[in-house]
Image 1 (cartoon, rainbow, N blue to C red):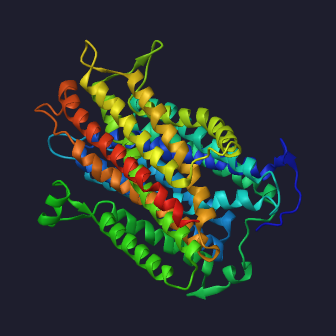
Image 2 (cartoon, rainbow, N blue to C red; image 1 turned 90 degrees about the horizontal axis):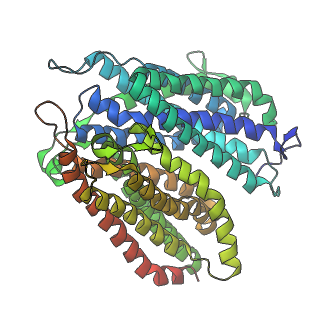
Image 3 (tube, rainbow, N blue to C red; image 1 turned 135 degrees about the horizontal axis):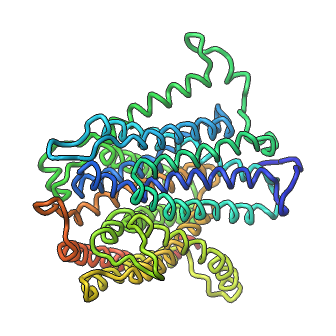
Length: 519
């Protein structure tokens, strides 16, 4: 725990909080701006089919959520958080500007091979950059406050708001620039703003109160191999990792029985690695259960394992918002409202706006339910989150079955779906982080927090795989009609609805048993 010394303050908090707030806001601006455009860019510019586009989206996002485990470990033991954030930010800027090179649109002769490879390399840079920046900017925030500082929770609420402000601005601005002015301009804008965030971090690092420095600076600087210091070996190793991720993003496993099992689209190398990691984690957990811990601690850990597993399914459903939801908005939606026409990518801003609006409501709700003795347990909350997620898909399924006179779905149906979906997010996402700290054995809380984020990465990959079942082969002219899109998306959303409702109901029925585990 930090024993941070007093520092200059702004609005009652250390100025370092707002340095981190702005850095995270612009990092999320770049990341979510990329996600808002990526599927449309792949399909409309490079001629990817829907299935391959969904899988790449899931693989890229999954790696971006998995690599923070590596970035956090290296920062804790060697680099320190400040250096990790600077390095990660530099990789992000390079990746965003690399995406600005779009080459020629796919034509009858095929794709622009150079531009596609530059895209894969750029996505690898961004994923690795997120891995170094995201976990460590959060850690710095915690270290700015002494162990018993009552302002800590408030600080993370402010910091979390930065994430959603960045996501909202990215979807609105990058979505418009990319689709209306040119894909490269949208990606480059993300790079410009990330660079601005990095500059303000450098200028404001004096406000971090020395809480983000390496654990052993002398060891970090000392020559270790071929005259290179440990610090430079870490940087070179990360760049080598970028090359590995570059190849992983485009590697498919061509094994027909396995491909048939998952709906005909080739399995990605990342999915196989995820299965291995997940199996290893469950095996470690099984060993832990028989390592001499008492019955109550064992029950709490079992409950946490269930919640962590459920979270992967929730995110697998939730992240359809950047896949089939965007495709629906592009192909079969009247996106006009209040005299304005949104782009398909801009519709992803609705989710971030709902988070910003609902966060204060839920922050107010839980303490009051607790005082009244009505606060549901963790399992019941997660069950509600899954069912709300299912209901959100039900809204869109109904909308697809009842288009307007013009054959298009109204944007208002998507707004309603987002309201329901984000209500589910509010019941699961912040509650899950609290559950990890409350239910874990003290000696493995860091590992379980890592597992929580790893299962978020698994959820991204699940999302990409599920979305392949909504893939639509283009017509003779390379287009998809609104009627064709609704005929596919309606049944797909219905299936997702039943998965969410069914899983939520099963968890709700198991709640009394799970609650008994912790008594």
